Image 1 (cartoon, rainbow, N blue to C red):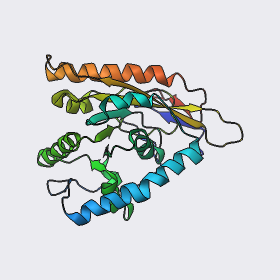
Image 2: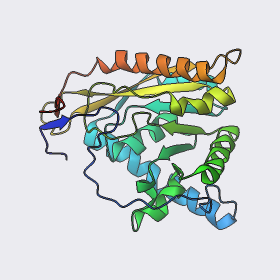
Image 3: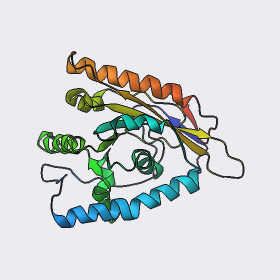
Image 4: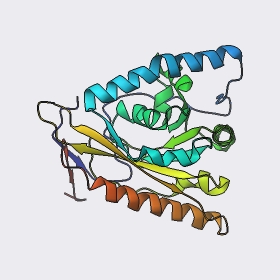
Length: 260
């Protein structure tokens, strides 16, 4: 459990407060996002369904008493691929919660290269659906193809647009519209989920209640630039509204003024 009570920040867009210390590997054009061999398909099924899914369920239920509100909204696209955007406030729970939300749909998560760079776990996370952000344009082409393939297969791709982890943060940080280019170009439905924190008696960890909203659709009659901004604004304002439902502050975040 994160024992920090106060965290001072200066840059809402770029400050990172995860306690993990990992040297990220370079994700170049040689990185393979989609494996087609029978062995790789088996390892994906084993690690994703046999190992990770029950662990995810037990972890978020036992540690955070997790609850979901609005999951029925996903039924509209139960057979379609879609994107989900959420607030980034946990090291362990953040990969687990969207998996439980989207179940039984297979979920893929756009992640920092740190997530595939750990000595042991880094070899497993790709089988758990990790899609690491690439370095350079040649690698980016493979990354985009992987996202398009997974959406085309009817899966869910999850993105944390805030990019950096702020543990237990109860507001929504401002984020750019960059990551909304994927659904804007493909015309794909978008959902958002907002993790809120609630006081529990006799428990060290607060309860996480996740609110699901959407679907939101890109207006394909407008230019891509306008589409992605509109999607971003809809998701951002919806998440800000839901974040107000938090009634517990585990860690206080205080902004440091520049030059002080």
